[in-house]
Length: 99
Image (cartoon, rainbow, N blue to C red; front, side, top):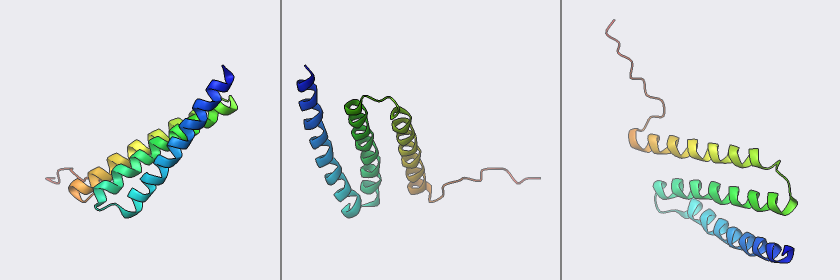
């Protein structure tokens, strides 16, 4: 059973590596900024998958906080970029200055 798991991890790693190469190409060459931002988010997800495969291979749970950190940063950066593209400002100053 262990050899089957090793084969599955190897095949998954190869597929994820090829996906990372394709996504890196889309980040660099993407036709629009929107495509580049979506590709950057997908790159973060694929990177989390690669780290998870590494954690499974090494039998370590110490990589889980790294995966969570990358997921959180990828989510926040995607939201920030989307807000910037929508309004051309990252931090809104919506306070009323009627005083």
